[in-house]
Image (cartoon, rainbow, N blue to C red; front, side):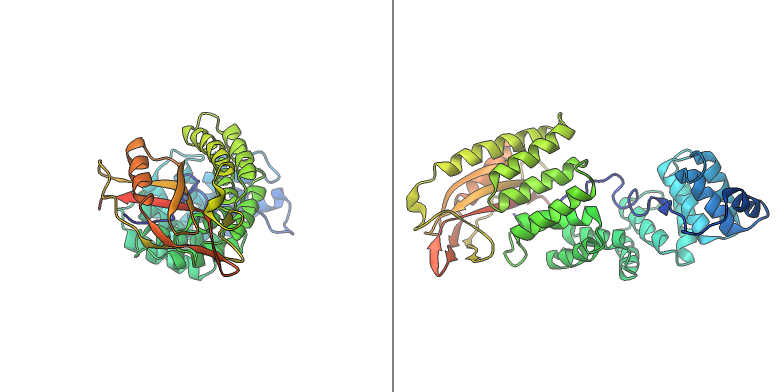
Length: 381
């Protein structure tokens, strides 16, 4: 068994769909569209790209993806890197043309060869996922590292994902946190979300920071105006890990309202309700005072005996998130499933963690009972 803190990316096509969105923006001072189009028609590649962007974004003209593709293609044929990159993205997204990852990869490669940093990052995503190119995770890491070093937030997020998952590079959660943080500092919402998840449920107490997890999750939710259910679900997890089951319930309810048929959210809501009720009925003998929560002023418990439950019954991998009460005696006194995988793995996770022992948490030098969340990952390598 391994403890892993990877939150799946809540977005389509991994990095590819969100790396750039074609940057459909325009400079503050520009000529009129008619003047720009006349310049484009005379063969000016930069003007052709701007006309394409206008059609793709609806900036001053009605959105027309086919016209956008046509102008990007004109610029790309002249070797303009932004034109090549934009044309590749249109093929990748199937806008104005039939979706074609092979064509997308060819044009994005041309742009990357000229140093277009967004193209370098997206090319890394394509190699990571085998989209239009032969899958090559090591090459994906190299390309993503190159773009991340240039300060591109989406690439920094992607590098964090690779370190968190161990794809293309050896798993290293502290480095994952570092790269997520760089992207989060640029207000990249997916990075804010994934970093919040890591800090909320990390088994490594040098990484876990539940109060910061709440702050980051709130930023991700607010940045998307509460329209992304995955971010609300992460916020619920962060609230719960920080000892606020009432707020966790409200956040999970909002996530479920956006995706009412999601069985995972339905089960999470039921789990939060059951755990909140169980927390009210904990015996007072668990500690000399109130139930503590890992965070400032509380030294978290340290696992000293963690037997391995063995691989899952079926080939593959899955994760189970548990709510655990570690008593002042260092023993597990209560635990419940917060995020289910399947009945078999839920049972294995519960049975195993129930046998764990800890050096107890301490508050003001005194051993206390503490509520923590633990993510258990099963993987058959």
